Image 1 (spheres, rainbow, N blue to C red):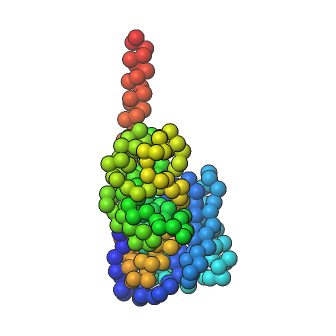
Image 2: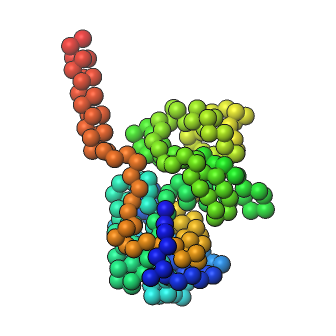
Image 3: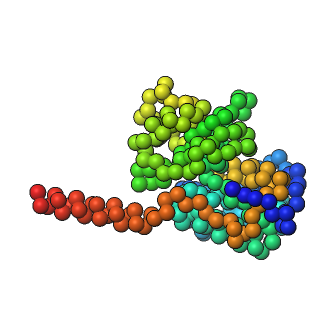
Length: 255
C-alpha cells in the first residue's frame, strides 16, 4: 500500500518510474517512461545484489535517461525470497534518499495480477483472480484480488498455502482466473478450474502499476518503504523441519 507524499512528488500524467524486483528467482529492472516500459531480466541463479545496479545502469542508458529523470523508485515488496526482497528494498531506499524522491512498494501478488491481466490484449481481463507464487517448503504465497488493468484491490491479503491445498482455496475463492506457475496446476482437472494465466509479476508489471500510482501523487518516504513478510519465522521453520527429520531418524533407528 502506498499513500500520498505531496512534499516529495507532484502529480504528473506520465511520471518516469524506475522499478526493481529481486523477490523471485530472476532479478529484473524496468523503467516506465511515457507509454513505454523498457525491462531487463537477469538469468536464474544470478546473484541479485551483484547484478541489480549494473542492470539499472543498462536499462536507463538504453532508455536515454538518467536516474535524476525518475519521479519515484518502485520495488517488488514481496512476499518472496527473504533476502531478495530486502535487496530491492535497500537499493530503492538508497536511490530515494540520494535523490530525495519517494518510494513505491508494490506487492508481488498485486504485480502478478497486473501482469496476468496485461497478458490478454483485446480480451476482457479477469475481474477476480487468485494469484500464487512459489514460497518453497511445499507452499505458495497466495492472494485474491479484484479489478482489472491497473486498478486492483485485495479481497484476501497475502497468505501461505500448502500446494496440496491450492485447488480447494481456489474453489473457495470463486475467481475468474488463476495466475501463477502452470506446473503447479498441471495435475489438476482443467475443467474444474478457472482459466490459468501464466504471468510474470516482475519489474515490468511493477513499473506499470507504480507509474499510475505516481501520477496520483502516491508514494512513501524511503524509511517507510518496507518489505511484506508473510512467513515471519523462516529460521524457526527450517529448524523445526530439521528437528522433525531428526525425530524421524530416531524413530527409524529405534524400530
